Each structure stands twice: as structure tokens, then as C-alpha cells.
Length: 119
Image 1 (cartoon, rainbow, N blue to C red):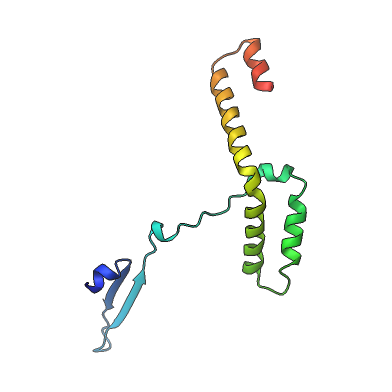
Image 2 (spheres, rainbow, N blue to C red):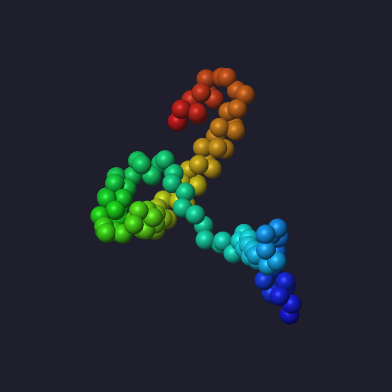
């Protein structure tokens, strides 16, 4: 197998120099989407309505004392991701239901449409 096929995410270039007979080699890596399969945590505003969120954040932050800011944020993110999994399916269902209700009343100005939108 050739080098290019084996390392298709890499680009190798020779950088030319006018002051030297040697050329610098530049090796660049491009990360493909398939390599980054880990889903990122997306903070949803509805999580702020959950009373446990402040405890999760506080415990995560205090539990990572002595670490760098990046590590502390990562730990907090991991804990929030794990904790919020129980809400995600309910949130998606509720968002879908609300979206359907909004589509149903779009363009209507009668009393019934207003009532459905409020409920």
C-alpha cells in the first residue's frame, strides 16, 4: 500500500527557501469528519429550569480543583452530558409537539388558534 493511500489525511509539502539549498518539509494533517465521531454536548436553555443543574455544575467544578481550566470545563461538560441524557428524549418529543402545534396554527387568527398556541 502506498504512503498516500495509507495516510490520506496528510499533506506533505516542500517549502522552498532562497537562502538555503535545503528545503523544509511541511506535514499537515486534515481531520476527516468520520474521525470526529464524538457528539459534542450542546447546552440547551431548558436545562436551566432543572433544579439539579446548579448542583451538577458546582460539584463538577469543585471536584476538579487543581486542574487546568480546560480540564475543569471538560469534566463539567462530561457530567452535564451524562446528567442531561435523561432529559434529551423528553425535550425532543416536547419540541416536536410544540413545532407541530405551531405549524397547525400558522396563518390562523381565530380564537381557537390563539387558544391552542397558549395551551
